[in-house]
Image (tube, rainbow, N blue to C red; front, side):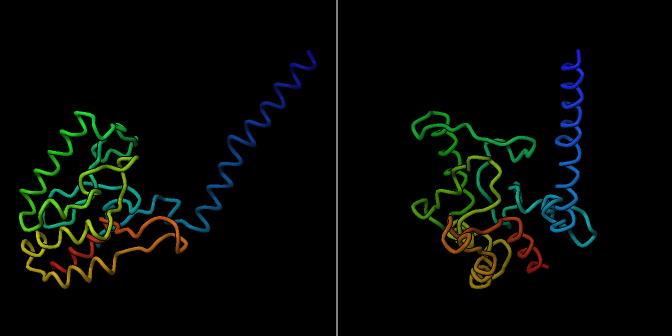
Amino acid sequence: MKVIVSSLRLSLVFMVVCGLLYNLVVTGIAQALMPKQANGSLLYDEQNNVIGSELIGQSFADPKFFQGRVSSIDYNAAGSGSGNYAPSNPDMLARTQESVEMWKKDNPDVPVSELPMDLITNSGSGLDPHISPEAAKAQIPRISKLTGISADQLNELVADHTSGRELGFLGEPVVNVLKLNLALREQMQ
């Protein structure tokens, strides 16, 4: 009986320490040292309404804005993942062909041969907020035509919102689509 009581008491202590106190301490440290990141890296408009998170991709229905990667989960951040289809999978081929057809319709000035792969393929999470600088630049003719903003100004906007490699050597340069579209919206006003 003594062993059972001792085990229950030790289990209760560990539940409180590991399940409650540890989480409170880590959350408190995160809130004190980096509150923006701890709260989801949210972006706000002028009225302090949440626009989105710079860490989660979202859909932009208006063709005047830059479009992000395709999302197999319809940008639902409640879960993430993709179908992990092989390139030969009929469903993947159909979805990719649909994306290419939409590209041709929405971007008649840019041939399919110049279509960056990240605009017709999804990321592993389905929530990637970034596209390549090439994917952003491929959309400039459409956006310039629809907004009246010159291609040179849009190229400069893309360059200003291109992040380099992590630590100077990890990954590829990327553009956060939400931040780029917020800057574009400012230029349209």
